[in-house]
Image 1: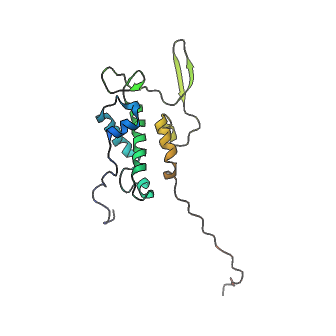
Image 2: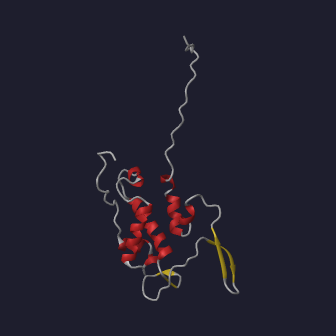
Length: 167
């Protein structure tokens, strides 16, 4: 490791604000602050949360878009993992485990209840994000940061006035 690299990890560029998150996403009003904070930490593994993040660097140090991305990922992770009451995330008592169903419902039967789900035609890596509306929004909004910069190929010019003889 080069000697000019920091010896300790960079501090988070964005901290979790539970009150702000609930005001933006009222579907999660029944989620405890501890559970939501844990999901925010997990979201930080998926979207780099420090000053060296491509999102922060591309926006000249502004962390607004990074906060937006991390909030969307927090919603996505909460929806997939939180216990539920009446189909809504709820970490209170009387909740049931999160549904194990992944993908869009492709087939349903009523008698004897059968449900099948699939995720066709998804780009590599997108399927997990496409399970919720917040994950799909994150996937779409963060597309610019998943692509490398365009570097045009070197084009040599033919210079007929130069002599290309080998002596």
